[in-house]
Length: 230
Ligand SMILES: Nc1ncnc2c1ncn2[C@@H]1O[C@H](COP(=O)(O)OP(=O)(O)O)[C@@H](O)[C@H]1O
Ligand SMILES: [Mg+2]
Image (tube, rainbow, N blue to C red):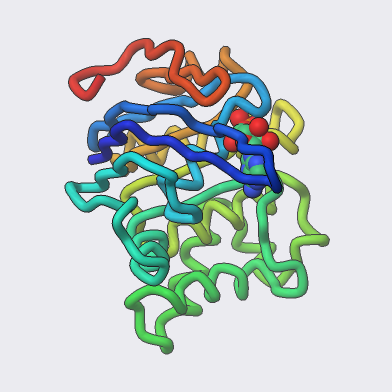
């Protein structure tokens, strides 16, 4: 599904250049669950953002079903993000003055569903993550676990094939974190969604994923488990 080849990302700050990623190469099979681990600053978020089309690489290729994201223009990348990718972040990134339902409806406005059907679909997405009775709450009126469930409903709104998760349980207590990981594992096993999970909890990574990539100073220093695309 995804082949990353010779990917590098350099940030410039004044005279200083920071190599966030250096010559990253790996592949992801359809339906695979991969964890990306490594200490803070090792390039995990940068890698996820490039695959999600939130940023563009300095060099290299990101072939998503044979199309190179590195060669796409900004508008094309936005299309890739809306059609194919669902993202979750540690901080949920919900719109604070909108209700749970409105947050999910907003994501649907970028999809193909006609306007008249969006509210019903958003409600169904929220019901699926157990939030039928929280739809009209704003993010500040939700617990962390509930807010992340809204973010899951939003991420699934346009039926993505690839889920990109950047420390999705980093702000949650361990019981709630287990619930959220349970939902994510279900999406991978039952619906066949391909998952890239950034986490610093290696025991979680080993338990839930098919294989693991370790980054250090922007390079892959270990790839364990997994199948054909290594
Ligand atoms: N927008 C940016 N501008 C400059 N440097 C950045 C930017 N984003 C990340 N970096 C730097 O790139 C490196 C990798 O960052 P990041 O991908 O966020 O690591 P991680 O998610 O593993 O903690 C770090 O040294 C970080 O300071
Ligand atoms: Mg990060």
